[in-house]
Length: 269
Image (cartoon, rainbow, N blue to C red; front, side, top):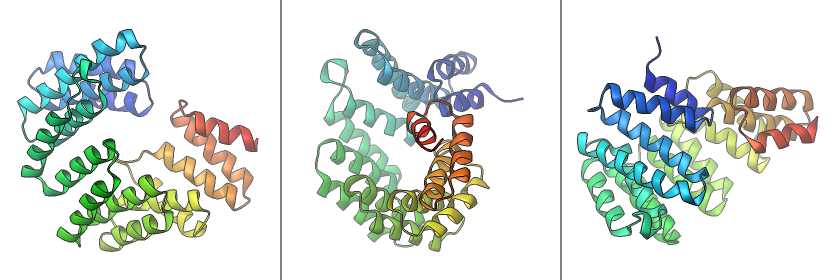
């Protein structure tokens, strides 16, 4: 018997935010003091808000804020809810409740509880403020503080990828993450992702993604449909068109709402 939260998470992963919100609303009604249920509902409302027209956006933004705040109130150590509040305060315009000072307050609350997540929170804020040097410094500080943590290297790698499109430096950090802990699975996903983007180390990338596909990702980790997409990209670069088509099709079977995958499949069909 799958729970309402599990069903809702599955709907989120399919990109069906409407269904997810309905399921999480039921979960909240069933268990109004569950911090997790409120946090998940907030995420569903936030995802709906990003796709809604301007009239619906204001009411969804207000609901998103209310649910994240309630989740953090019910469990002050729910750092995902606090991170959700930070994203809300940084993304929402002022008239909808956006507030950079409040974002910094939440980041400080996170940092008091978990140094690594604190660096992540401040790096996100600096990224939104177009201060890439300060964002990078947060990740470098995290690696300095915890050099043997796969997560610190992973986050620095993500920063190289997103801020600079520096695939080589990113791949080095992801390799370090899995060297420190071969069971740190998101590292394998990103090694494959880098190979697909850069066209380098394709064999290594293929092996890394196959390893990731044998693992069941947690809800906040990259999902299998993206692994199949990047694997398709590697096959395409290797000239294996049939395998690429198969991989793209499998990705779309799991989550049909991926325009980039549909486009890739169309190009080689």
